[in-house]
Length: 216
Image (cartoon, rainbow, N blue to C red; front, side, top):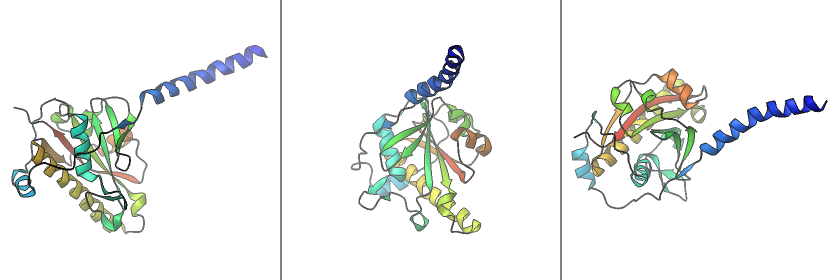
């Protein structure tokens, strides 16, 4: 009887301890407060906005990453929970997944932090182009269709596409202001990437966007 209990305890430990180890490895990353002053004037940023497909491997600092994500879809009116990009019906249905050399995260705009998803480098899976493996940051935009359930399929496709585009343009303007390179991409193996992102059936990848320093 004692030996049976011991065996059951050992088997249970084999399942529990790896889970605990993973949980300890995957910790949220608190981002520094975004710097919301400075930068180029809007008209200059619009003039400088462009697409780049050649990236240096240099990593972005945590401050630049915080500023980037806030510009993309951060909270700019904390009292109302409103964001830097509009969304249809104020659904706020677009989530931003962040793939870096350190792992895969999801941006928590209200908590200003990165919640971990996968503790490994999955940048190569975020697109079909070679440069996605080199660039320090790849953003993946995911629409939560559970938040759009009252709309028709046609309207949902229209609104989620438009809402993603607004966020992507914010990223373009931030990069133009900060001298960073970026390209928004539709070439993504969506079924494979959805598994890596651990998406539900009612979550859909809309676009991806690569950000980094331009290769000189």
